Length: 587
Picture 1 (cartoon, rainbow, N blue to C red):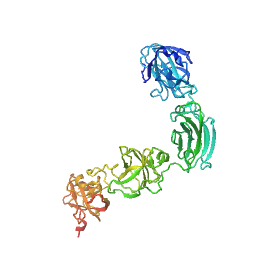
Picture 2: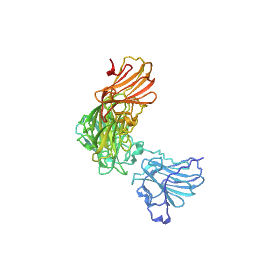
Picture 3: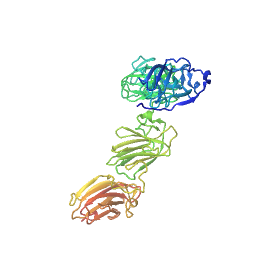
Picture 4: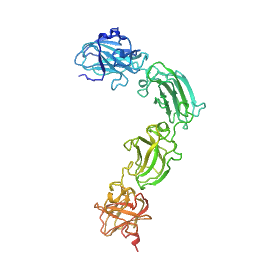
């Protein structure tokens, strides 16, 4: 059973008043004709043609576009049956197709769905009679490119046995350059003819765009080193494109990165070897004069240097030192997002936006067992770029939701994080808030959050059995957090703690009592969730230090929080677990 496919085509009914048109469907077709019956063998029926033309297709039907010839490319006398009828063409140009059906209707198409820039027209319920077919080009006078017309009852076929892929080994049309990293007279310039008779997308396996020639325009034989990036750009009075094939055959493509419709390609950490360069243009047609720039400084000979984010520059809004378990969490900083450096040009990868050359903020972080969340919020679309302690770049656009960026480090390193907050589009700087957290992006962990003993403890865990030694078991930690214990745990609790426990005690009870306390120069508090799920809290059992005694302790897990009595406070504290007593009550 044959498959049936359908593609949207423009259909316009035209009367015989078309005798005054420039095209003539009664003229002898340029590449012949055939008679086929429904169910024909050798499907698809394929014909060698040349696609293109210089007469607007809209002369045949107002809603058609592109350029075709005076006479049809091919004519089909078809005896219809139960099958759909498919006309499609493959060529190295951006093709279009016009089909005049036996009832005088016109069907037009530019890009058949799923077949790139190749046209296709599907007639779902064809009638018997003559079909006149024009295979043209989207641009004017594109040189009548070799291609193939395919007629089928199965589906679209857009192969082209005459295809001419871009060939990096063909001698360049404009000449070559031999350069060594650090070369003088930077930039080097050459006059090239931008454009050609081949569609760049087809010639480069879908990587690039614009019309190019089969042979490259320029060879750059480059002796690289690690100190320089390589910039290839172009300047012209019309819209141009660039395609570059590197030493290993990888493709670099661009349209407008050098500004004002001029293309620019920055090759980071270039390899030594031959770079084949094609100067393309939109719209096809013969090549026009353009200037090609080859530089190690920037696009189009910009000797001010390429865009750069400098982690060594003094940060715009200062910095801070934080240790895992810090409070309050999040640490918030007001900044202005944006700047004059294009982040993509500076960093590449998936980095976006516009930022200042200097970091906005430096975080010197001592990592522990917690994750690290860096995010920013604003009323507009903002981005974030971070250079981590090991020199790796991290970038994000919308990871924190609502057009806000967020980066999550699940195993953060200790060291300096240089942070930039950018604007997605080029614009004046705008107010934003940078958030540094070990809990979540932004301000997700608000004051009404509950304490969650299922979270990993900030400072780990310990297993102790009755009679453990040494006694007391001691742990240094940072007291405090953003969650109010009275609302997050129990109304009897006091202070401010983190959402996750600070410490988890797995205890096997015996005949001895259990004493849990905390000591600090500030005013700490203590919150404990017992093995039975009960909340037990204390503030000032031992002077200003909290302590909780369990006369008949249970076996199981005790989740322990050490808080601060005052909001937005934090200080070092010592947690003690004992079976003897509180420190200040001992003999």
